[in-house]
Length: 452
Image 1 (cartoon, helix red, strand yellow):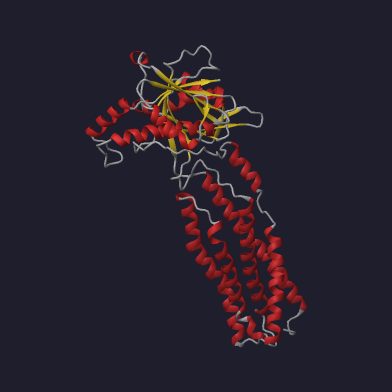
Image 2 (cartoon, one colour):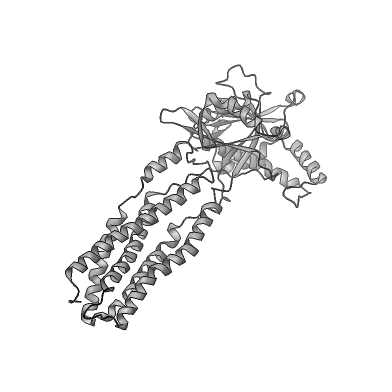
């Protein structure tokens, strides 16, 4: 080792750092490219948390430094020295091992790692951090030892351990320093992706509507308030004000075939902490635009990949029950699958008052969320109207808690009397449809909503 000149060692160190920086930059840009491409395929911006980002940076920094270290070894021993003459077999083995270390790994990474990355990007949502953390560091350790095994032949037992410890410390310092470098302004990318496509924290629901058609007639709309408390809606990665809603609905109808307009459904995604008043104001505007079919995007216990599983509660807006004298205090009646005609209104002889605020009350008495289903089942009848009295402090989550409990209670009552089952998802037999119609007649959902 003493035969190697200091200038060559210094140049090797510079080459190590420079090559590590170039390789690290390549990995960084590749990762951000996939991240941006992922956001282009769906409505979920791929935002990496700071914890995961720091880990990814550190992993790629260590990986880059190991590759840079092998390049530095090749440079030092590429020229024959006194201890490594031209025909020295150990020198040839060292050069071969370090040359093909990078190529072999790059080939494997391109064939397996990159392929899996593309698959994960377009076909599934996968969280790498909790599963591959330990294995990734083992990979780095194996690669480092692989690059070092031939070089250790040039060192005696006394100096071998000392050299390894010093080099590991040096490479670790370089790696930690390299991991602090952000080649791309990722915060700027995050802001661009979130500006017209915000991440929505959906409310939890114990009920979700069954899929009845293979054709998706939904228009996804996200509701979110800005820093000033002004409500905006987002669709197709475009930000709109509420004044744009009538024009937006009309344009969406014009894009579709006439026979499918009847099935057009607005799928609403809103943060669980959104005030219900803002949501109902939006629904009132939909009703004024003659858009009655809507659904609420929710998350359930069955949700595995929220990026691709769209759980929802479907319902229909109906303005026949209430006179909209005051659009602020009175809201349209809401039904799931039952129209309340004039002839049916006279049959309503019972009512249940459900107050939705910070807490939920049943006929002025506080009720636990877990007890709602049984209470709805016990009071369900054709002559009972459930009045949702919504306070100004009520959140979207509390509203969905009541609504999903109501729908789940009716769903359980209907299934208890169901005798005909549909074996196919998208095809319904006449017997099945007839029985479902009778069950809806026997167990209707009649809801009146009033803002307090």
